[in-house]
Length: 123
Length: 349
Image (cartoon, rainbow over all chains, first blue to last red; front, side, top):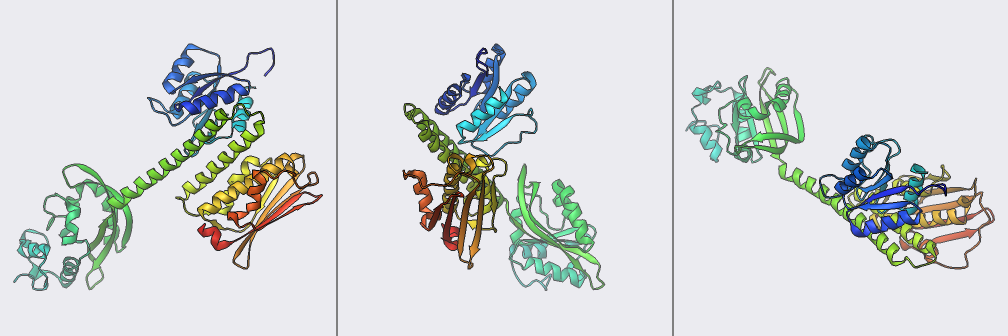
């Protein structure tokens, strides 16, 4: 990202507080802006309020009315410019219905690879 | 006594004796053809759940073992098989037709939504429909030998679900360990240390993932190598080759961590630290008894033995499943190492 621009903003969606904290730190340490949501419903509420989120980094397995896959589908339909990075302790999901460029990282993930993917999605 | 050919006295034999067969298309037993008598006594005197359906109207005779399968259905004896199983007839009809055309079928754990207790219920059956022929070779009826496998199918599904959940929790726990480590070690100035730790946990997670998919039993070595090498692979620079070998759970974890250290070192100081450098990872079985794994770096800077013996070096020196059978060479062409371990230890470890 150029010095003149604001750092790209990443919305971290994770129900487990410690993992959310670590993900926020990871994203901020890489120079991105970070905001957090505890579940998909909170994430949708944030996306409805603000228009500066570039990437949503979300866990798939979360309680609430939507899991991460449903959140990703909602982002595809309602906020198509936003890029999606998914993570889960389960095996790789079917990404075929999601926008090209959507990335998946299995937990436990490697921070640097996730950051590399984010930099490629929001240069 | 009616039906003198039936010598036993099970509940179903009593019922067959007492039944008014004149009301059915097969008529009174004294007029039954020999093949029906043989088939009926075979079914009724068998301890294995079995049923017979006879003639174009599929008149049903079944044994004591078959009773639980029918549940609270209206009495099936003497009725048409298609009427007894009307709720699943679209599933059964083709198999019945095949049997009548002379072709036996074997179905394993076939899932049927049956109604035997006044409600729809998913049940599984492993069964065989065998044609029964008269002397001229025409199929007159069908014998169904069957075992209900609903409980087994459900418990397999449950154990698959538990396996999946266990793997999921394990990987989430490893993520937590990583998160706790990065929070606890925030003030550590040498980020390299924290990164190596997290990378090793990621490697361990990947190894567990392979094992989980193999139900925590043996995993193919090729898959372990491919999955461990992949994150380090930079455009096919690590060439892997070797025969099919199965590894036990401990060997999978050991090989994953070992390969991770080798690949990390190659990326940091070895062949993969410069453009054009390559690694050959080759394994073979010697004398049907020993696995030999060779790691050969070429095209990189000259290899020099490290001054500091860190955890990574010690992991490598432990060798495969801790056998300690390791030969390392620091040559001008690059680093190389050879690891040996008995095959039977790799499989059981």
